[in-house]
Length: 547
Ligand code: FAD
Ligand code: SIN
Image (cartoon, rainbow, N blue to C red; front, side):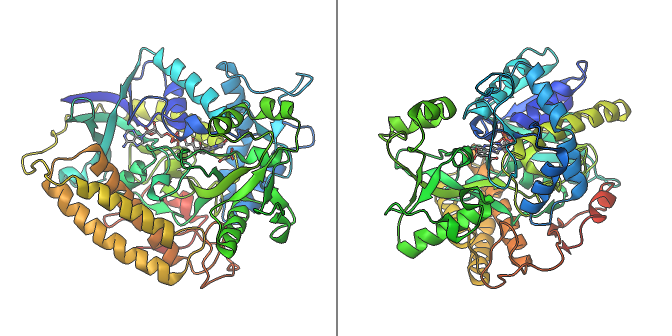
């Protein structure tokens, strides 16, 4: 089965849906989503969205904080661009009908505080900001006659001129996707394709991310010829709920912003030993401090306590966290919450410019899949949803212009399944998946060494070989597609981590404990890379190039 669209958007998180809603209403659009339209990291975002609204704040302070937290690796023009468009993006959300929490006198929006921010700067909808944003965007998208929503479709690979054996300027022409309901692979051709597939937290054993976050867009973009940058900077969120029945449940940093304290099992606070900002130090520092205490004392978790605050305050600010914990037998108004760090955010990704354009003509990348230069070596809390909104709007503006000049989509060859059979040992996929996530956690985690990274590299090479063989011989399934992508992403993370001979931001390696005086991006170049139109944008700001 084949489809033709003007714009094919792969992914329906806050980035993909914001883009869809900003394209001209005459544009014929398809939004592919791996599961339901709403499912993705955006839905679970808690803390909020950073925007300088307080009288004491300014865009300049927001820019300064972002660059400081990013440990001097942020691209100033990406930071400036994002922060300067923040109010506009938030006003758009408000105009769409999203209700943010107001302060006591109801005159202003309540702004919460998170790590690394020098001011209260995070607008939010209680502790479920992502739910408020994503469900509203999904509702609006469903009403648009020009947008076709295709749920339970997982994109497998991009179709490019070069993949079809054509010469000349490589261009993106569409994608193959598995219709998970029907179990068949369908062909999509489009004038323009957008990767909005989110991050890759599932490459680690413990993560705050939902199951769909398997780095598909990064892997697809890389295989199609796009460069990726800064993949070593995986952010570990310091405080995920530790409970056998709680899968990936985050305890927002805003809880520390509103007075929550991190404690050892004996009740002693410890953050003052690590940073003068205590619980509100940037995430890399807090996660490392917790990791250090857990290893030092041989404990499985530390405590996060907010029970000294009035119960009324807790119900009002953290209703979902309160309810979730209570369901598991923890009354957070009375007792501390057991927490551990977990993989949370992929700072690196497909290189883009300020319009979300990638190295490949007609291919855009937005949201967590992209590396815009905003986050540098460590993303500041609540800058991610902001980036999704700002870059989705900018990309839509560019696509609205470009599409008029782009010829209609070609008809593309169908997926060839003639050489494959059904697997008799699907369990191999599950085994490889477990192995990968375990060694990434053990060897490529919060604290790294060259030896551990080399061990991980050896294992990922073996897995990649095995999976390539499996992929070549057997009919593909959802799990195989995801595993194939996770292995690519794991390899990109390890290669980048081995290339960085210093500790900076989220990349902390015992063999090189110090920060170099010059900050450089780690840029990985795919085998068949062709120099691209966004070269100038990245090269003016970065230096390291690897193959
Ligand atoms: P997502 O929202 O993850 O959406 C990705 C979409 O792509 C999904 O629809 C998925 O199904 C689809 N998809 C993936 N692969 C394929 C494929 N192969 N084919 C088809 N579809 C595919 N950031 C903040 O700024 N503030 C916060 O308060 C905050 N809290 C967070 C809390 C949690 C628990 C988590 C996990 C993250 C949080 N973040 C927060 C980070 C932020 O939520 C994410 O970075 C952001 O939502 C990413 O949006 P996205 O649109 O890029 O991807
Ligand atoms: C949180 O609420 O702690 C998550 C915020 C973020 O990841 O930006």
